[in-house]
Length: 471
Ligand code: PXG
Image (cartoon, rainbow, N blue to C red; front, side):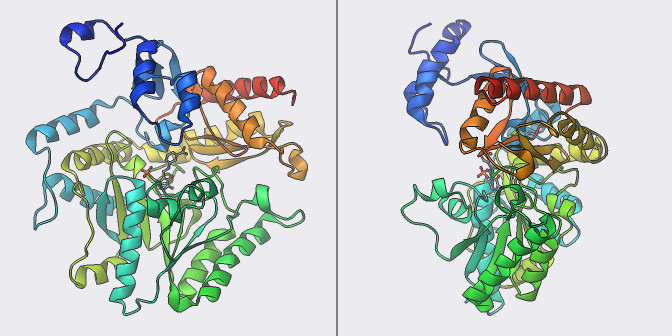
């Protein structure tokens, strides 16, 4: 194969000579900067080239079949290869591939999607603003929150409180809102009026003799302390993921969310649930705040909205937030592709399948409990595992040096990365975050596929730990 093979401009004749993995890697290394990657190291090792997918499986350019324990990046909820979504995109591309929603115009797919979202979200959510990603969704949240308080005659409410080790995206506002120190370090300036409190990470951060319930209250009360420090008249919103996804699938103690909700109501602070990972069935409820039983004012949505088949994000507004926005003149915010017709058509097809095939109910009553109990059975008493957390089809395995004492490894990150690499090399995709290993498979995963994921994970993790002489 010619080094200069360009898969975009190649002639039909050139295309009959299928590029090899080495060709792909050379071109990729020459021209493509990957997100969140050390490009020097990656180019040396070579990327894995994923060429097709079906159900919960991916295939790489060497013909390996890989089971996707992460649903892409927590997004392919419906699974790969659904013809209905391809048909919806194709039909819409032919009928009306693009039109905007700015200047007194709209179109059928975005109308249908908004009506469907108002059916699937809890009753007070009746208005939806569209964007292209979760990051833009959180930028939009900030714009809505400021607009809301200005309309209430309280423009001094400017501070937004978020959490350390939260993830809210990679735009400047998303990354500021997130509490990832390694991202902040590469940003010379951040969005103003955003501050962070500690995360409700019991295993990693609770004092030795504190109960999970007491710890949940203690961490929630940090919000109250921060509001009082800033002055309630200056605080606009609290933004958080119902469970932290990228931060390690951290499920807060059950005392946490009721206390957060009480504090937000008491000080008149908007409560924003970032449902980018938790939304559209991940925990077995349509939205993960329903799993925890609290009532937010705004939801950030993306990922599972289209199951990742095309990019789309959205913000859902509680009617009490939407009303003053609707009634107070122009809202100076929007994107060329706000409510993109093809994305909206794919979202409608995706959500209709999730609903009509009973996929979310199956996660709640069948596949979710099955994954959770399988993981606990296999890893619950493992000598290097401190806890297994999660609900529905999202879970984490916490590595630990001394599980009972909640003592973590000094180099837990490296150990988790070695485990992740082993999984990858045995054709299972898992994520590592710090010293936690995470799973979030497509919501259509079967019992047999869950068995395959859990068995492969056990074998690969044990092999990695043995190699590191920890088993
Ligand atoms: N909020 C949450 C809770 C997220 O998880 C975003 C916002 C931003 O969405 P966009 O579409 O702008 O990426 C996310 C994204 C990982 C990983 O490796 C997680 C995300 C994105 C990329 C990688 O865990 N979450």
